[in-house]
Length: 126
Image (cartoon, rainbow, N blue to C red; front, side):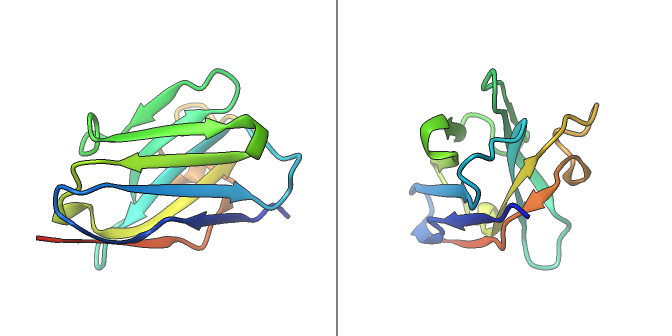
């Protein structure tokens, strides 16, 4: 069973930046797509960004476009989320997810992923 481990969360002032990392426990695991989702207290889980492993094609949620960047490091089996211009509305637990197979139309949906991390808290204060 592949395990994903997130790191990099923390507390930051509005306008600041954070970089989240996600690493797979199995060094040979790459999957076909990785993503970040987030869930604020009392709200549903929300798609943030995704990247396909082979072509590195990226997808972004509307609320983070232009501010967040997802990337991958093939040699490290890791995915990153660079978050800039953070707003209080970005505060949430951020989850990393990875898919073993492509599921048509589900790259921006949590049902499209097989493995999930435990989450890392991001707090943004004004």
